[in-house]
Length: 229
Image (cartoon, rainbow, N blue to C red; front, side, top):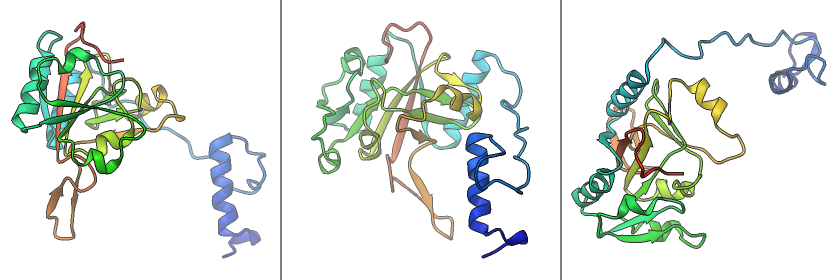
């Protein structure tokens, strides 16, 4: 399809993409196109203390039907063990770099993450425990980037129960723009807002379709000795 001035729609779209990526108005394919879109959106909606930021995160996580828990370093192993026992978990996937103390109070069989751990094998694992890269208060979102204590993406997408530990307040940011400034685009990112769920045309909610059916988030108090990497 050809637009005004003989420019094809495809060329116009690609020109906009090139301009957005390079911010160079002389880039090939950008001649005659409208100016770049002004990015005037707010980086954060309001000012918050660290405590208010954590409280907002907890509120939004609960809105998405995640279960929110609080722990300090000494109490974290017992909290995790209790969550696994509540689910009747007999096995738990363990990402590389997860602090050993986190699972010191559970008798569940450890299943270490490894390259040969297939999705089929993970499907028989009851739970997974991980840390995270950061959490976003305004959206109630957890972000994992496969760093220490987080594991590969499939590790948190296949088991039916995910326990994610967030160090607060240091891992909590207000907004998505703030998060994007801290995350590497070269790492595979998993964005989690509540348990996996979808709805059909009649709005019948089904959970556990393409990820964990149950998401437990443990907010680990600042200064706790049992930190993830």
